[in-house]
Image 1 (cartoon, helix red, strand yellow):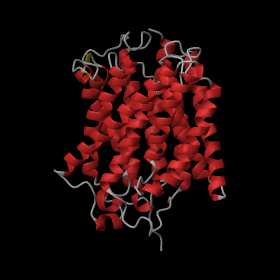
Image 2 (cartoon, rainbow, N blue to C red; image 1 turned 135 degrees about the vertical axis):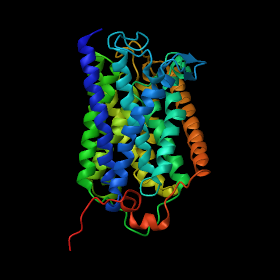
Image 3 (cartoon, helix red, strand yellow; image 1 turned 90 degrees about the vertical axis):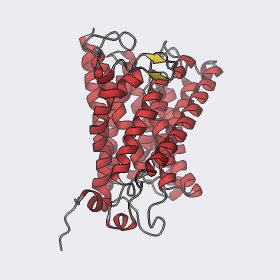
Image 4 (cartoon, rainbow, N blue to C red; image 1 turned 180 degrees about the vertical axis):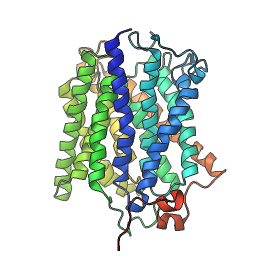
Length: 409
């Protein structure tokens, strides 16, 4: 066991934890003021629920003894056997309990990302049930497929350094299905639904950017050169994504906005996540530039064309950006950066791109189908959506009995 590696991963875990409160600010500023607290609640309740679910069953399902490449066993239920000694299957230099804690922060954040698509219209009990079932039957198996020893996508050779498939593609495409199943917000296209507090959103984006260094660099699971490369690639792609979005917005709308620039940074961060520990800094520039541009197009053009109400663009950023990032890893990955990875198309190995494309397709189909089934099953027991009266008065007051702002006459 190495105390330096252990310290580094503990700090990285704390940084990743901060991303979920940061997400609450990022999403909260983009909704109308009557829904800001309910939007905060989506992220904060995930901290509570997923922390417990991960300890009780999630970690075991994701990283426990493999069963047919599809799911981990139940040997680590309640963290039974997960102690202070390293588990060499995952890291020989940090305690197993530290690895578990680091991965727990990913399990908290990922379902919270989905909440952006259904903001301002989903009943809180239905949301809680959806997230708990989604984490257990979608996130945990997918984490095992990609990261678990024996997982079939891992055995296939798919590369996902910090969560392209597991975090972003899964949450993004699930968000799209959730938005379609719930339907559009009342008054969409007729009433103003402009963000009520852009500075709050920008602050949230800054916290996400900061936490992402822990997200990606921490996935090296050690204080080493690979962590350094992942950190540099993370910042570089975020910077490129911010610039790309600002330029695209300028060309398309005539002005660059701070909301757009912050969103572009998030798009770049999403795009680099699967390849952060496999590509060069120069490649991360390309990944970030393309990520910012295509996420802008997905949100400003595709959403309007197809008419779905992805309220806070969870699909536009995470689904589209994550897909691009996973495919880009198949193009730009190089063993000169990470000998445990593989060379991609740019380095003479076209097969990796095919593997990445297959893993993306499998992830998309699985998450979309499973999300649809879970939502339909919940709808048989309880309503998914608030009433029109509750939606009009705002979810803060109607669902939680509180308001974010005091009105002075």
